[in-house]
Length: 155
Image (cartoon, rainbow, N blue to C red; front, top):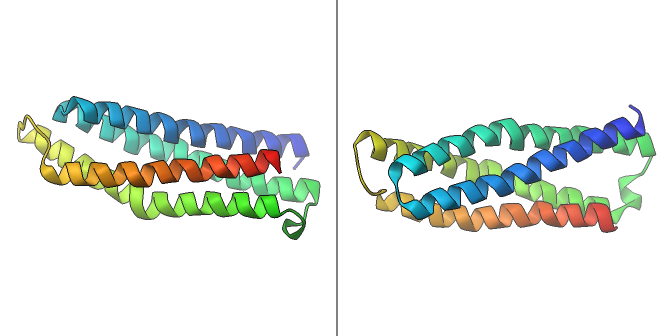
């Protein structure tokens, strides 16, 4: 593929990926602050939906564009330690998302939906424990790709 085409794909992926993980965190934290199960359940559904639409799709575009950029520029990864660091940080964020955030989000969504279906006025204590863990893992999962972005731009 031509350099500018794969660069466009790569940058579009970064925009979708970073934009969604940041906005999803804001939605979710604001919904949690209300302590209203209906609002929390709605936010959880949206976070899960947008993760599949934008985070996963953005990740795929980042990988496709990145591989395309390697081919278009002829850069060897051994000659670009900043790329190795950036790819490693992105990979660590992906592992956190797949093994930590995604399962937690699905579980929290089920807890919130159950609270709504049972006409509860408060979220269960188990949700609160998950929320705290989600926030900790989530901050890390946002900082890692921000670090990757830094290394990709500021070599």
